[in-house]
Length: 152
Image (cartoon, rainbow, N blue to C red; front, side):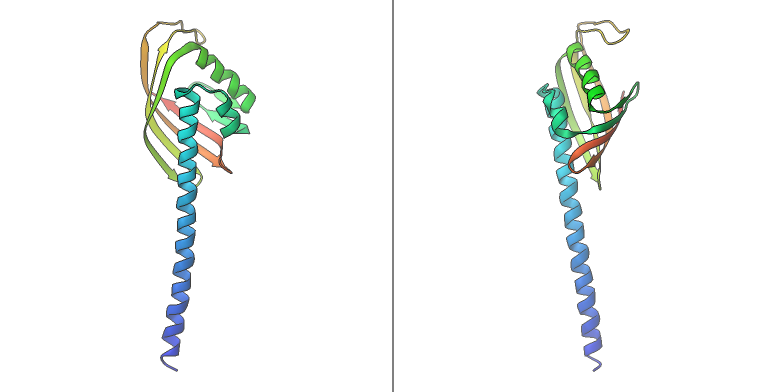
């Protein structure tokens, strides 16, 4: 009888440990999937300059919180993106780091482009610019639902 109690205790602990391990593995798989979405987003949006990536990877009600603007919804997002796309040539986004936790992914990198078009009150200079960026994304069901962005 005395041996049965410790065996039951270890058996329960093993089941709990296996459940926790499965949960951890599922969480890690989700985080890797979310990082993959963000890699595809940056590559498609700027390195490949494919506007259709927005329909593929953003929710319809996406929210964007930028250094200089707030964007509500995918249609407004597309308008702003097209403005930047037409103002900059040779865009290159290099991801230096991606960190995922749950449904959040932080990206850090460098953006380079040739600034040839007008953006608001800023006239083209025809020179290459390079800025660092930090962005935190919130993903829901494999799509970007919210984005906080800072360029420096």
